[in-house]
Amino acid sequence: MKLHIVPPSAGLQWIRLGLQTFGRQPWALSVLFFLSMAAVSVASMLPLIGPVLALALLPTASLVMMVAAAEAWQHRTPTPALLLMAFRTGRQRLRILVHLGVLYAIGFGLLMLLSSTMDGGEFARVYLGLQPLNAELAQTPSFQRAMWLAMLLYLPLSLLFWHAPALAHWHQVSALKAMFFSIVACTRNMGAFLVYGLGWLVLMGVFGVGLGLVLTLLMLAVGPAAGILVVAGAMALAAVFFTSTVFSFRDCFSAPEAQELPQELP
Image (cartoon, rainbow, N blue to C red; front, side, top):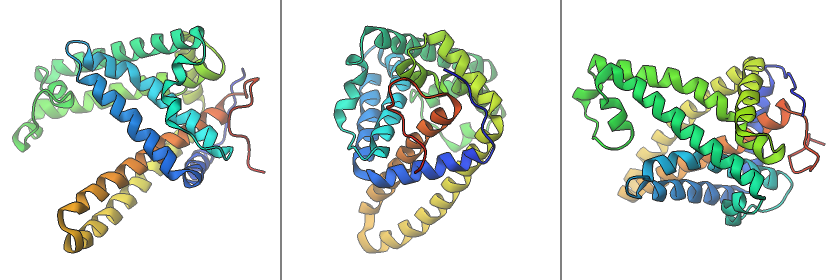
Protein backbone atom coordinates (compact mmCIF):
# COMPACT_ATOMS: atom_id res chain seq x y z
CA MET A 1 0.00 0.00 0.00
CA LYS A 2 1.39 3.37 -1.05
CA LEU A 3 0.03 6.86 -0.46
CA HIS A 4 -0.46 8.99 -3.57
CA ILE A 5 -0.48 12.80 -3.74
CA VAL A 6 -3.10 14.07 -6.16
CA PRO A 7 -3.66 17.57 -7.62
CA PRO A 8 -6.52 19.77 -6.33
CA SER A 9 -8.42 19.18 -9.57
CA ALA A 10 -8.90 15.56 -8.50
CA GLY A 11 -11.63 16.78 -6.14
CA LEU A 12 -13.85 17.74 -9.08
CA GLN A 13 -12.97 14.48 -10.80
CA TRP A 14 -14.27 12.52 -7.80
CA ILE A 15 -17.57 14.36 -7.96
CA ARG A 16 -17.87 13.81 -11.71
CA LEU A 17 -17.11 10.10 -11.38
CA GLY A 18 -19.59 9.81 -8.54
CA LEU A 19 -22.32 11.32 -10.71
CA GLN A 20 -21.32 9.15 -13.66
CA THR A 21 -21.28 5.97 -11.58
CA PHE A 22 -24.61 6.77 -9.97
CA GLY A 23 -26.03 7.28 -13.46
CA ARG A 24 -25.13 3.68 -14.29
CA GLN A 25 -27.14 2.18 -11.42
CA PRO A 26 -29.35 4.94 -9.94
CA TRP A 27 -32.08 2.69 -8.58
CA ALA A 28 -29.77 0.05 -7.13
CA LEU A 29 -27.52 2.62 -5.41
CA SER A 30 -30.47 4.65 -4.11
CA VAL A 31 -32.17 1.56 -2.69
CA LEU A 32 -28.95 0.35 -1.11
CA PHE A 33 -28.34 3.75 0.51
CA PHE A 34 -31.93 3.80 1.80
CA LEU A 35 -31.60 0.29 3.24
CA SER A 36 -28.28 1.19 4.88
CA MET A 37 -29.78 4.24 6.58
CA ALA A 38 -32.88 2.26 7.51
CA ALA A 39 -30.71 -0.37 9.21
CA VAL A 40 -28.93 2.36 11.18
CA SER A 41 -32.28 3.93 12.14
CA VAL A 42 -33.71 0.60 13.30
CA ALA A 43 -30.58 -0.06 15.36
CA SER A 44 -30.95 3.34 17.04
CA MET A 45 -34.40 2.32 18.31
CA LEU A 46 -33.07 -0.54 20.41
CA PRO A 47 -33.25 0.17 24.14
CA LEU A 48 -30.09 1.25 25.97
CA ILE A 49 -27.53 0.32 23.29
CA GLY A 50 -29.47 1.64 20.28
CA PRO A 51 -27.79 5.05 19.76
CA VAL A 52 -24.31 3.60 20.32
CA LEU A 53 -24.97 0.68 17.96
CA ALA A 54 -26.27 3.05 15.28
CA LEU A 55 -23.08 5.11 15.48
CA ALA A 56 -20.94 1.98 15.36
CA LEU A 57 -22.67 0.86 12.15
CA LEU A 58 -21.90 4.07 10.23
CA PRO A 59 -18.35 3.11 9.09
CA THR A 60 -19.69 -0.16 7.70
CA ALA A 61 -22.60 1.64 6.01
CA SER A 62 -20.07 3.93 4.34
CA LEU A 63 -18.05 0.94 3.17
CA VAL A 64 -21.16 -0.73 1.74
CA MET A 65 -21.74 2.28 -0.52
CA MET A 66 -18.09 2.31 -1.60
CA VAL A 67 -18.19 -1.37 -2.56
CA ALA A 68 -21.53 -0.81 -4.30
CA ALA A 69 -20.01 2.08 -6.28
CA ALA A 70 -17.10 -0.13 -7.34
CA GLU A 71 -19.62 -2.74 -8.51
CA ALA A 72 -21.63 -0.17 -10.47
CA TRP A 73 -18.50 1.27 -12.08
CA GLN A 74 -17.67 -2.18 -13.41
CA HIS A 75 -21.17 -2.51 -14.91
CA ARG A 76 -22.37 -4.91 -12.23
CA THR A 77 -25.59 -4.36 -10.30
CA PRO A 78 -25.04 -3.88 -6.55
CA THR A 79 -27.61 -5.82 -4.56
CA PRO A 80 -28.92 -5.58 -0.98
CA ALA A 81 -26.75 -8.62 -0.21
CA LEU A 82 -23.89 -6.13 0.21
CA LEU A 83 -25.46 -5.11 3.52
CA LEU A 84 -24.21 -8.44 4.89
CA MET A 85 -20.78 -7.96 3.35
CA ALA A 86 -19.04 -7.51 6.72
CA PHE A 87 -20.17 -10.97 7.78
CA ARG A 88 -18.97 -12.65 4.58
CA THR A 89 -15.45 -11.30 4.17
CA GLY A 90 -13.73 -13.21 6.94
CA ARG A 91 -13.25 -12.78 10.66
CA GLN A 92 -10.23 -10.51 10.36
CA ARG A 93 -12.06 -7.87 8.33
CA LEU A 94 -15.15 -8.18 10.49
CA ARG A 95 -13.07 -7.67 13.63
CA ILE A 96 -11.43 -4.56 12.16
CA LEU A 97 -14.82 -3.11 11.16
CA VAL A 98 -16.15 -3.76 14.66
CA HIS A 99 -13.14 -1.98 16.14
CA LEU A 100 -13.68 0.95 13.77
CA GLY A 101 -17.33 1.12 14.73
CA VAL A 102 -16.56 1.16 18.44
CA LEU A 103 -13.87 3.82 17.99
CA TYR A 104 -16.19 5.98 15.89
CA ALA A 105 -18.94 5.75 18.52
CA ILE A 106 -16.45 6.70 21.24
CA GLY A 107 -15.10 9.60 19.19
CA PHE A 108 -18.57 10.92 18.44
CA GLY A 109 -19.55 10.55 22.08
CA LEU A 110 -16.52 12.57 23.16
CA LEU A 111 -17.39 15.19 20.56
CA MET A 112 -20.89 15.57 21.98
CA LEU A 113 -19.55 15.59 25.53
CA LEU A 114 -17.19 18.46 24.72
CA SER A 115 -19.94 20.42 22.99
CA SER A 116 -22.09 19.98 26.10
CA THR A 117 -19.65 22.11 28.07
CA MET A 118 -20.96 25.08 26.06
CA ASP A 119 -24.70 24.69 26.63
CA GLY A 120 -25.28 22.00 29.21
CA GLY A 121 -25.98 19.35 26.57
CA GLU A 122 -28.92 21.00 24.79
CA PHE A 123 -27.34 20.75 21.32
CA ALA A 124 -26.40 17.11 21.95
CA ARG A 125 -29.95 16.25 23.00
CA VAL A 126 -31.39 17.98 19.93
CA TYR A 127 -28.91 16.29 17.60
CA LEU A 128 -29.64 12.87 19.06
CA GLY A 129 -33.38 13.44 18.80
CA LEU A 130 -33.96 13.54 22.54
CA GLN A 131 -35.24 17.13 22.54
CA PRO A 132 -37.17 19.13 19.92
CA LEU A 133 -35.55 22.16 18.31
CA ASN A 134 -37.35 25.48 18.35
CA ALA A 135 -36.45 28.93 17.07
CA GLU A 136 -35.82 30.31 20.56
CA LEU A 137 -33.37 27.56 21.45
CA ALA A 138 -31.57 27.76 18.10
CA GLN A 139 -30.91 31.48 18.61
CA THR A 140 -29.37 31.20 22.06
CA PRO A 141 -25.61 31.98 22.07
CA SER A 142 -24.74 28.90 24.12
CA PHE A 143 -26.55 26.58 21.70
CA GLN A 144 -24.82 28.15 18.73
CA ARG A 145 -21.40 27.89 20.38
CA ALA A 146 -22.03 24.20 21.07
CA MET A 147 -23.12 23.66 17.46
CA TRP A 148 -20.03 25.34 16.01
CA LEU A 149 -17.72 23.48 18.39
CA ALA A 150 -19.32 20.17 17.39
CA MET A 151 -18.88 21.01 13.70
CA LEU A 152 -15.25 21.98 14.26
CA LEU A 153 -14.51 18.79 16.18
CA TYR A 154 -16.30 16.62 13.64
CA LEU A 155 -13.84 17.60 10.91
CA PRO A 156 -10.83 15.67 12.32
CA LEU A 157 -13.15 12.81 13.29
CA SER A 158 -14.42 12.53 9.71
CA LEU A 159 -10.87 12.65 8.34
CA LEU A 160 -9.83 9.83 10.66
CA PHE A 161 -12.60 7.62 9.31
CA TRP A 162 -12.84 8.81 5.69
CA HIS A 163 -10.61 6.07 4.27
CA ALA A 164 -10.47 3.78 7.30
CA PRO A 165 -13.30 1.33 6.39
CA ALA A 166 -11.94 0.98 2.84
CA LEU A 167 -8.40 0.38 4.14
CA ALA A 168 -9.79 -2.30 6.43
CA HIS A 169 -11.70 -3.97 3.60
CA TRP A 170 -9.27 -3.77 0.68
CA HIS A 171 -5.93 -3.71 2.51
CA GLN A 172 -6.87 -5.43 5.81
CA VAL A 173 -5.16 -2.71 7.83
CA SER A 174 -5.84 -2.68 11.58
CA ALA A 175 -8.32 -0.12 12.90
CA LEU A 176 -5.79 2.28 14.45
CA LYS A 177 -3.45 2.11 11.47
CA ALA A 178 -6.37 2.63 9.09
CA MET A 179 -7.40 5.76 11.00
CA PHE A 180 -3.81 7.06 10.98
CA PHE A 181 -3.34 6.44 7.25
CA SER A 182 -6.73 7.98 6.57
CA ILE A 183 -6.04 11.32 8.22
CA VAL A 184 -2.53 11.43 6.71
CA ALA A 185 -3.95 10.85 3.23
CA CYS A 186 -6.60 13.52 3.72
CA THR A 187 -4.20 16.14 5.06
CA ARG A 188 -1.52 15.41 2.43
CA ASN A 189 -4.20 15.82 -0.24
CA MET A 190 -5.97 18.71 1.45
CA GLY A 191 -6.16 20.72 -1.78
CA ALA A 192 -8.15 18.00 -3.52
CA PHE A 193 -10.44 17.53 -0.53
CA LEU A 194 -11.07 21.27 -0.23
CA VAL A 195 -12.07 21.39 -3.90
CA TYR A 196 -14.17 18.27 -3.35
CA GLY A 197 -15.95 19.83 -0.37
CA LEU A 198 -16.52 23.17 -2.08
CA GLY A 199 -17.77 21.38 -5.17
CA TRP A 200 -20.32 19.51 -3.12
CA LEU A 201 -21.43 22.71 -1.37
CA VAL A 202 -22.06 24.33 -4.75
CA LEU A 203 -23.81 21.23 -6.07
CA MET A 204 -26.05 20.99 -3.01
CA GLY A 205 -26.83 24.72 -3.24
CA VAL A 206 -27.86 24.41 -6.88
CA PHE A 207 -29.82 21.27 -6.07
CA GLY A 208 -31.59 23.03 -3.20
CA VAL A 209 -32.60 26.00 -5.33
CA GLY A 210 -33.75 23.78 -8.16
CA LEU A 211 -35.63 21.52 -5.80
CA GLY A 212 -37.35 24.52 -4.24
CA LEU A 213 -38.58 25.68 -7.64
CA VAL A 214 -39.74 22.19 -8.58
CA LEU A 215 -41.46 21.78 -5.23
CA THR A 216 -43.38 25.01 -5.73
CA LEU A 217 -44.65 23.77 -9.08
CA LEU A 218 -45.42 20.29 -7.77
CA MET A 219 -47.35 21.63 -4.79
CA LEU A 220 -49.70 23.25 -7.26
CA ALA A 221 -50.03 20.02 -9.25
CA VAL A 222 -49.92 17.13 -6.75
CA GLY A 223 -50.20 18.81 -3.35
CA PRO A 224 -48.69 17.14 -0.26
CA ALA A 225 -47.34 14.23 -2.33
CA ALA A 226 -44.60 16.60 -3.48
CA GLY A 227 -42.91 16.13 -0.10
CA ILE A 228 -42.21 12.50 -0.97
CA LEU A 229 -40.44 13.58 -4.14
CA VAL A 230 -38.33 16.05 -2.16
CA VAL A 231 -37.22 13.34 0.25
CA ALA A 232 -36.45 11.00 -2.66
CA GLY A 233 -34.36 13.68 -4.35
CA ALA A 234 -32.40 14.39 -1.17
CA MET A 235 -31.78 10.66 -0.65
CA ALA A 236 -30.54 10.32 -4.23
CA LEU A 237 -28.11 13.23 -3.80
CA ALA A 238 -26.79 11.68 -0.58
CA ALA A 239 -26.34 8.38 -2.42
CA VAL A 240 -24.32 10.19 -5.11
CA PHE A 241 -22.10 11.71 -2.42
CA PHE A 242 -21.32 8.34 -0.85
CA THR A 243 -20.83 6.85 -4.31
CA SER A 244 -18.13 9.42 -5.05
CA THR A 245 -16.07 8.61 -1.95
CA VAL A 246 -14.64 5.41 -3.42
CA PHE A 247 -12.82 7.44 -6.07
CA SER A 248 -11.04 9.53 -3.45
CA PHE A 249 -9.82 6.30 -1.87
CA ARG A 250 -8.81 4.83 -5.23
CA ASP A 251 -6.68 7.85 -6.08
CA CYS A 252 -5.08 8.33 -2.65
CA PHE A 253 -3.79 4.77 -2.23
CA SER A 254 -2.19 2.19 -4.48
CA ALA A 255 -4.52 -0.52 -5.69
CA PRO A 256 -4.86 -3.70 -3.60
CA GLU A 257 -3.90 -7.07 -5.00
CA ALA A 258 -7.55 -7.91 -5.63
CA GLN A 259 -8.60 -5.55 -8.43
CA GLU A 260 -12.06 -4.79 -7.06
CA LEU A 261 -11.73 -1.01 -7.15
CA PRO A 262 -12.90 1.04 -10.13
CA GLN A 263 -10.03 1.60 -12.53
CA GLU A 264 -9.10 4.65 -14.55
CA LEU A 265 -11.25 5.82 -17.43
CA PRO A 266 -10.36 4.05 -20.71
